[in-house]
Length: 233
Image (tube, rainbow, N blue to C red):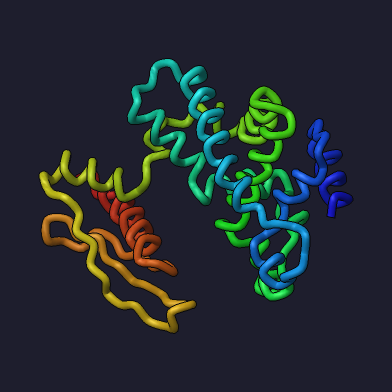
């Protein structure tokens, strides 16, 4: 297992001294669950630590790089970067999924591509780098991987969730708040498909689909925003 960690450290130019620690960061909980006698613990404790390290580094970087933005916009930028989807994108950029150690069942289910798993391994690696080399080393690595998101000149509003943007827009333009109504929820629990409508002022402005109610509501809000922009309401 340390051999895989060594390859990762070399590819990412990480000055890691404790390869056992980095190797642990790559172990998904499904592996020790399937190997009761395996010495390797999962990466969950390192994930816990890395979450805090990433939040600190990203917060500091955004504070320095966007001096004209208020707390709300900085919070929106940070939320986008440290969200499950945002961290999964960073993990893919770093190629961490290829180095994950999974149980056979999880591997067959292609868990190494699941956003929550990728986000967790990114956090775990950040935690391992912090423990091994300190905050400065962890900061340099995180800033290098997340440079695109940290330096973007796109308006901060782009980082606000569609539901939040729809609420702001509908209140400002129509004096009403969105209501989300489930149209249908079909399929087995492990593969349910939700269909949700976004209703503002009694009118259906958007419809969205998703594997969870939240995802469907987000898609419906995005569709409603397009409708409002298109109509110039």
